[in-house]
Image 1: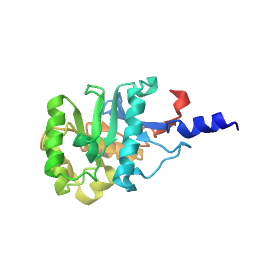
Image 2: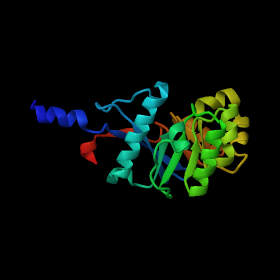
Image 3: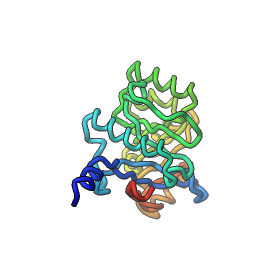
Length: 210
C-alpha cells in the first residue's frame, strides 16, 4: 500500500449505519443514523467516555451535513450527547428532516433542561432515547417530540411505561423489535412507530458508497 493510500484511509471518516423506522401502516418514516468503526462493525458507543461519544456524534453529523444521498431519505434520528444539547458543540440547522435523539446518559440538570427548551424554540425536533421511567428522563418529556422505548423495558414496566411516555403527546417509537411476535405486541400497545431487526437491521455504508 502506498503512503498516500495509507494516509487517505487513516483520514477517511468512519462509515455510518442506518436503520429504518416504520409507521404502523408499514410506511418508511425515518432512519436512525449510527456511528460505526472504520471496518464497518458496530461499537458500544454508549459505554465510551463522554468526550469520545461527542466525537462519534460529530462524525455522524458531519456525514449528514455533507449531504450524502443515502442519508437524505426522509427524517434522520441522530444520537446526541450533553455537549450538543447545551450548545458546547455545534449542530446543523434545524429542519423537518432532523431529530436529535438525547441519549440515556444525559442528565436532566439545569443546563440540559435549558438547552432542550432553547432547541425546541429554535425548531429542532427532539427524542428521548431508551426511556425507562428514570427521573432524569421524565424531566425531559415536556420537550420530546418522540419517546423511544426498548421492548425489553416492557417486561419490567409493562403498559405503565407507555402511559408515562405519552404524558406530553409525544409519538412513541418501539426499539429492538426483534421478531414478528413483538411487532404484533407493539402494535397492540399503541406504538406509533417501530424500529428493530424484525423490520430491517442496521445497514452500514462506507463513505465511498455515499
